[in-house]
Image (tube, rainbow, N blue to C red; front, side, top):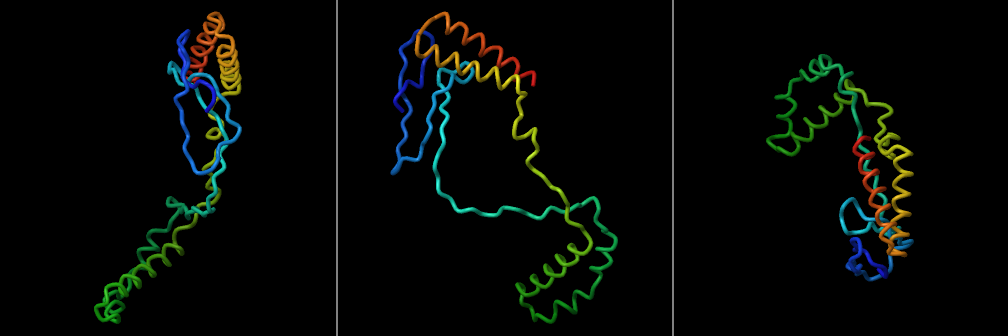
Length: 170
């Protein structure tokens, strides 16, 4: 960090953020306007992190469409006879029961289709007009930090308050 990240009005700005790492992983660092009434500015950056890709997809079932009477009837087995074959081995008995139950669930409870966690409203929750006002607030903050003009700071505070009001409305 080479620019002030803490500022309030006419007070002296300070650099208080410190990033310690073995390698450089921050890119495109930009200093945005203050966050609400806080005296800390928002830091936007891209980070280069190496991770292994894992598939966290889990099967979702359409529980409301399951045939539970059929499932219950299909599980009406001679469990005692089936489990006695394993001669008291609890792990083997559990695996038998679990395998039977999972197979019957697959047969009687369908998998839900089109399960989409990424709705457009979740990726962009703010209205486009509010996002433009936020950009204007950021621009005023940058001008304010360069010029230290009290008039510009007053304009920034006014823009900040309008953005806060619009976000709460949204």
